[in-house]
Amino acid sequence: MKKIKSVILAAVLVLSMAGLMAACGKSEDKKGSNASNETPAPTKENADKGNAQTPGTEDKSDKNDNESAFPKALSGVDAYPVPDIASSGWQFSGGMINGKEMEQEEVNTMLQACGGVYQFIFLDEGKARMINGEKTFEGTYKSIQDNYAIEIVFDGYEYYGVFTAINGETVLILANKTESEIALYFLQIIDEG
Image (cartoon, rainbow, N blue to C red; front, side, top):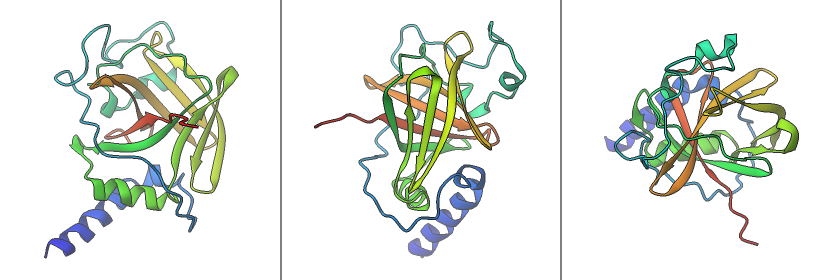
């Protein structure tokens, strides 16, 4: 019975994330990932205190039409100023759907649907790259909301993101513009070589 429930839960997850997973390749490549679901939900209770603010609660100096659609999933996050992210990479490690933490099985299901890899790479001069399995999308990013959020745009896909600190670790939380209730966590890729 538990296995059937897990299969149904995985199917519901895949259906609820149709917009996000449309960007994922249908590759059979099963590259490994160090992603884990150890990151707790970023809330005022568990985020490090300091110079945090909640994005999306008031319009900042960078007003435009896209900001009016700031995802609900990011509005309660204690956001920190956007760090210098040029030349950095971030890999998928978990998330929340409708305010509920993803289980490790759900994280694994999403990674499998994305060909085993789901990353955002930020380059110089505001250029961004999204890697899903064997597919790579080129786009742009910019700081918005008075440097407390970022907007990432690829052909056909738009994301908003905020940075927060959880247990002393910087976490990038992204939401697809069309999926207001889904927030995905990304941890910085550390080059150990």
